[in-house]
Image (cartoon, rainbow, N blue to C red; front, side, top):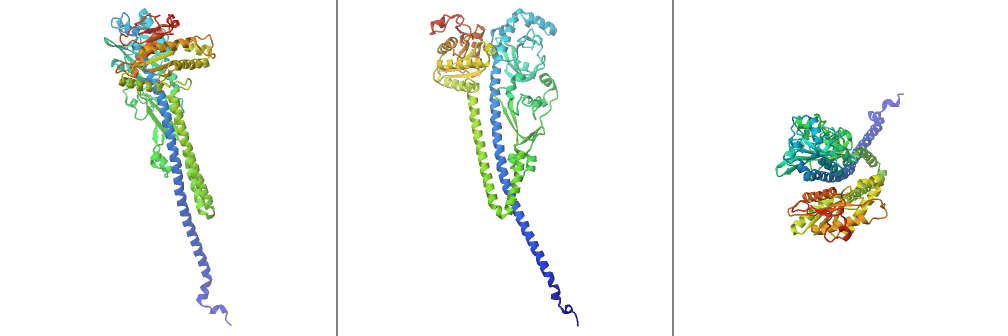
Amino acid sequence: MQHPARHRSPYFALSPVRPAVRRSLQRLAILLVIGVLMAASWWLADAMSNRLARRELGAAVEARQQVASAVTDSVGQSLDGDVALLRGIPATVAAAPVVREALAPDSPNTLALTHALSHDERRTQLERDASLASLNGFLRRVSDLAGIDAVWVVTRDGLCIASSNANTAISFVGDDLSARPYMQAIASGKTTIAFARGLTTGRPGIYVTSAVVTDHGIVGGIVGKLNTSRARHWVAQQGSFVADQNGVIVLAQDRSLELYALPGSPVLTMDPAVRAATYAQQIFPTLTVTSQGEHVHEQAPWLPRATADKLVSIENGPPSLLSMKTIEHGGLAAGLIMPFDVWNEAQANFRRNRLLIFLAAMSVLSVGVVLSLSYYRERRLHHDTRDMADQLQQANARLSDEARYDSLTGALSRRYFLDLLSTQLRASQLSRAPLTVVIADLDHFKQINDRHGHATGDRALEYFLAVCERALRVGDAVGRLGGEEFGMLLPGAPAGQAEQVAEAIRLEFRRARPKSIPDDIGLSVSLGIAAAMRNDTPERLLSRADQALYLAKARGRNRSVVFDTHSNVESRTPGQGAAGLSAAGQTESANSTTTV
């Protein structure tokens, strides 16, 4: 009897293999479906995360760039205002009679000296010259009042004949300054402002110059210096810096960047002799500013190229935003480096978003969660963007208020006062209506701060503004020009009427005082008055008012002086009060109104 298996057909022999093939095909189909689902889910996750990251990071770049521009504009406006006032100092000093007399061709002093004398012989002879003693004293007073480190007088050939630091260890008197770059500007009659390092002191500073012009032409010049150590408030903002006219960073919040040259700056191609005379060094490391567009685009191809190109690297640091603004007066420029601190967070958010969306797309049961999460993130992004826009709007409003009003007294800021002066002067010239400017300076204000504290000084400033507001008319304006110096703008008022207003302010400020100011403090104010002329400019008008103020200070303070635009000489003797003043005001011989 044979075994039954020997009679089975081939069909029945292969039948046990068919279920294995079927299972293999089923596994292959499942793997194919899973692969398609994974690919589709990954594509969907990548597309959605790209969109989210592009919007989030693009909004962050735009918002931070606006903040950087706003901060740079604010720093630039503060710098522009300070520089504008700084430029006016040598121009005002150049018009002083004591300066013109010292530089006159027939002057008996140092103009007879030659460069054949040694430096020590020149200095000794100049400092012993009695005719220059009053000029040295005048320059010291100017230096103290203006808050700058030094002011000196040079002849046309570059010899320093008088200085605010005369008879000191660092006296400039007798120095041969003919090689200094600013002498070219003086010889051409230009007013300049530039950075340089001092030959005598070695200290870096901002130099302002003005030529002294008489009937004999350009006879010399006035040079003032503000050490950069006094100007560190310009770079108080994190990441801010100031570059000079040659592209050299002269002040920076990060001091390690100082004396770096900006890429492509003129100092890199400057004549070596001029560079050495200006900066006392030859080699300037160039600030490395590298565009991060290509690098960022490689790491995050989902980010638009235009957004990536806005990011730079400073000295091989992290991605940052760089904002620059050149000021109107002089060649200085304000800059800001703002690190883009959300870059790493944005990359992490992108990777997290892609994984979350991928996992959500892979699970039908988690679709609702994924949609809810996406909706929540969209709403959060919209909320963050709106909050950022609100914060930006509030920041702009605060910056606008800070730019318009002085934070202590509430008077107009210096920048806004100068803008208003320009507007009113144009209106006055078009309508032929009178316009008068008054500059007031509180006498001995530094002594009030030193003896009674800055809080008492602040109350004195607030009290002076209150006196001005009571005396001025509707439509007049008062602004704080700096420290204890205020400017008043009287449209429609001729010089005589402005003179009466100034005297009323002076008398009330001296006689009446609030209880918050001690009685032993002597309050007085000196005022300079100047009326606008046809084809006048704001600078010339302020310069005349400044000259009147300086004369009021020189004549003993506590008085008002009117600038006489016709004779430019003193036309009223001390002791004569202005017409229309009270009897008490007319009897004060030391508190008079004088016209110059």
